[in-house]
Image (tube, rainbow over the protein chains, first blue to last red):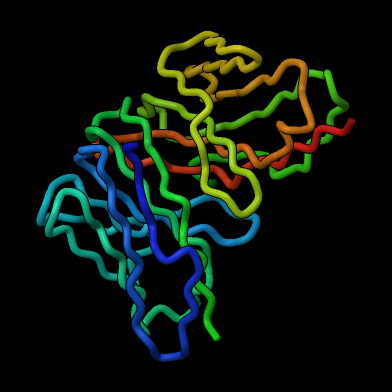
Length: 114
Length: 111
């Protein structure tokens, strides 16, 4: 079955440590996105990529980095520069980048700073 | 002003009633509008999308769009306890496919 797989489901980070969240899709979708969700809040865009080897900052990119070396994969690194990383991270993909593209989400990674 | 605004609720309705969820947006150039349902601790799932002014019905769900008023709503008929969740309104405002989300409305359907 096609879908988006995020791993791990739960992740614990120590202060000052970089961690990488995985996102893989087998939907043959062109565009991929990373969102962050805090309790009681909507989703905020971190980074997005429309094609391989290209990506753009979203609204809250500071303290995060991404790569898009393969169409199927869009990993997110939470760096030590991100001062408040505890949140629910969601990866999404769309077939194209036109306005009518529906976004499909992975199951999310819950990151906690310990 | 937030780009996409929703009343956070909670909105409480009795089982079998109609639940009405509302969303306003600020960008008049917005073209596509989506409603996602999110259960606690889970990822959002798409339940409706609408691109044209008017109503769009899918089973118990009806999406309504009024671009002149910059307003989109979701009606849930015959509400069930399983409909209890947070409903996120999302608006696509450019050809990047980026979605701008509201903060979500929590719906509680009481048996």
